[in-house]
Length: 533
Image (cartoon, rainbow, N blue to C red):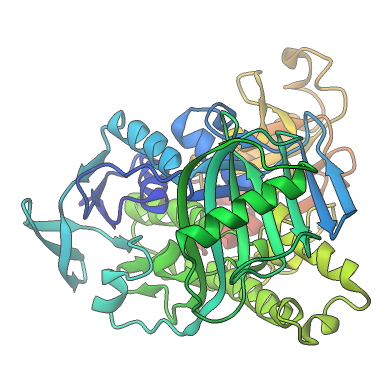
């Protein structure tokens, strides 16, 4: 079968290519550039725990070696600390990392992956769809025709794929602007990020009363100053003056010495493509959506797009297309991003001085500070990973379903589990293989040797039910899971979202949930009868 064509070799496109390769699907990545990304220290990303774990799985590299995992977060208003959060050493925390470093890690992993081909200097010119596949034509030094099974546009804000498919991209322009500087200097609390609203020092030039400081490796920092609405020019002289003023304010004296690494102006747009699928053509990342105001991170959502789409394309590639499964990509991901955009757009008037925020967070400015903290830390309506509660793949009316601390459709907690070979691993380590995960909660299994419990109790019956599921599945065992009673069974999608939690071993309910999760597809050779006893 023809490979999947991915247009765009940024972090989202490369992540999708590696995620498909992990599921034995070949890809061709059309890279408009020369095959490498220019280092820009001021262009960085804050990755939440789930997206950081995704990149670590695909690259085989701990991001802590290339970025900074925050130890804490402070929010200040004038001279007062209004909130301070410290992350425990074993607690998931955001990772701040330069985007060119992310791309470099992904490119290195792709170079070692025989199922991924990167075609440099290949600019997309046209797309033709047929019932059996898609053809892409590229121009440039390596211009040619490429034949693929599917095509995914990960080609950014000005997506050629989106334009060729005549997909509208409505939204708002320049909802926020930030002056950005990356610099190396000595500041207190080297691993702690800071949001400072209405700092007490005198503002100079076209700057609003908010600045964030986020640490980078080797003593570097990224500083962002919120700019007021409009198109006021930020000159180098104004930016340097603001850097010195800010550093002096934070160190209670004269500005410490600093080495300026990079500068820029970051403009945030809010846009959402009308369609994310057109036949065999899909959109992902900035080609499908733009967001990022109030501390939210657009790259996070792009990586989640890739994670969601990869297992569905892999299933279609290996077992034939199933429209319900492929359509669910747009239904799930577009709904989540749209909800985040709505929450952010409702909160924006509060930052601009209007009353819109009061409809969400009643009370004083402390509510506004808490809302901004949520956006920066990946919590609440602005920042938390979305749940696919209204997914067309969600099973209905399951006998024996019980609530746990993870809502149905939300990402699962990363607990320690015992794999089928007896090894202890993290639950997130088993994601992204294209298989469903069935997790039995069995206290005591972490103490006893696997050979003593693998053939005892409910395990044989559960193992038989897992073998009979309509999609490949892996059976895992955990000592505990938040909110789950002993001997309950959780079904988890390949991208780590909870399908259901059942009380005890219920083969019929488990089968029905698995069948709904893969869009009603029953793969050839799977024992259906055993699953419904």
